[in-house]
Amino acid sequence: MTQDRSLDGVSRRKFLVGAGAAGAVALAGCQEGASTDTEEGLSGDIIVKGSSTVFPVSDQMAQDFMAEHDKVNVTVDSTGSGGGFENHFCPGEADLNGASRPIKDSEIEQCSSNDVEPVEFRIAGDALTMAVNNDNDIDCVTPDEMSQIWREGGAERWSEVNSDWPDEEIPLFGPAETSGTYDWFNENIVGSNTQHTARHQPTEEDETIVQGIRDNEFAMGYFGYAYYNSNTDAVKALEVDGGSGCTAPSLANAKDGSYPMARPLFIYPAKSALEREEVYEFMKFYLTQAETDIVEEIGYVPSSADLRDDNLSKLDQEANV
Image: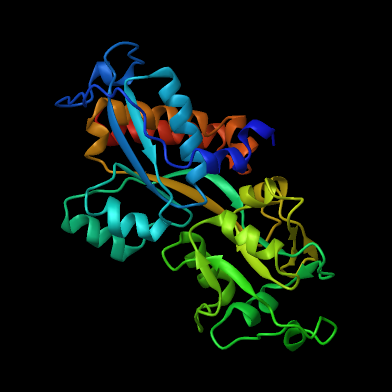
């Protein structure tokens, strides 16, 4: 991962507010002009909310798109997948929502009640990472051991899970309930018969999770791989044994499916927003660039050429181009 695309840089530019937007260009439908890269006249405001995991991708796409179209202002805010859907996207106050898990039926119903129709695009892959302090001697965990620690009423000391582990309390740092990462982890690792512990310190700021682990010798926490990838000196990633041996979180292991906590990442535009030329062009740019090394440099698995082409075809269909 190159330094100029590190998460340190991403956090410094977290909320972009560009100047000089000349007002939205509203078209009755995205016909021939919408599918071309209009160098003059493309303008307007685009609001992106949602997943903190997807945030660095959307943020980089926004910067690169605005560099080509200086009259378009794209603002990107990290609100969590669920927080973005519930508070911004489904009420009709955001054009796009990033998500680190698929949209829920209840969210589709909420959107529908406000005449918002979400359109799903899978844009990358992630290796969800469980991390500990660098001074911790533990190197590998199983899904069951993670569940014992992260479930409601679960183990509060390392030794309660494994007698060979330290007899020390485990400070926990993780996503808030509004996070798609929280939802994915709760469903796939904590387990369907129990609930995620409320004992952890929740946040939508993944860098805060990194800092909590770094500053507490026996701490534990989880986040998207990109945040580990930019903080490899600050924390240690645990390998995960899903039954086939300990496997490290990596882009290669996420891509081939050998890593037990690999998962897809999504972006959801509102179908009505795609009728605006600037939103259509931004989505076209986003889906095209998602197959490039931009995504890999951030710390995620890029979409394939086939997925890119399928996404672009779906975009034209949904936008009636």
